[in-house]
Amino acid sequence: AFNVVNANINYRAPAILGDELEIYTALKKVGNRSATLYQEIRKKGSSIVIADADVTFVLADMRTGKAAQLDDEFLSLLDKFKSEQSAS
View 1 (tube, one colour):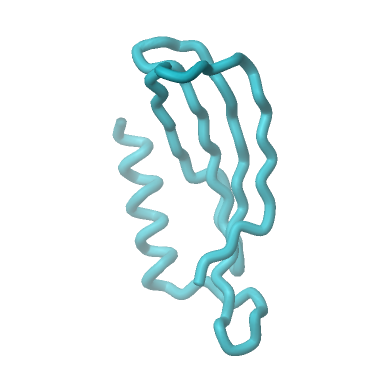
View 2 (cartoon, helix red, strand yellow):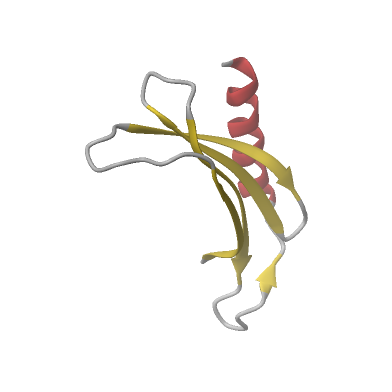
């Protein structure tokens, strides 16, 4: 199971009910047992940043509850995701 172990959020501007928002996600860092995503929330069609965040997650071993090493298959998926980011 994947568990969020840290979320650092910066609120930059208000959003109100009815605002359409877009969330941009980028892979920031990959370690042996964790990865960090950078996320930015913007008003749709605008460069106004509502919030940005760094979200760190780990893969937890369901038997022990401890962080497990990210396997090659998952690391390959993260590499593919990062490559797609660079292309766009």
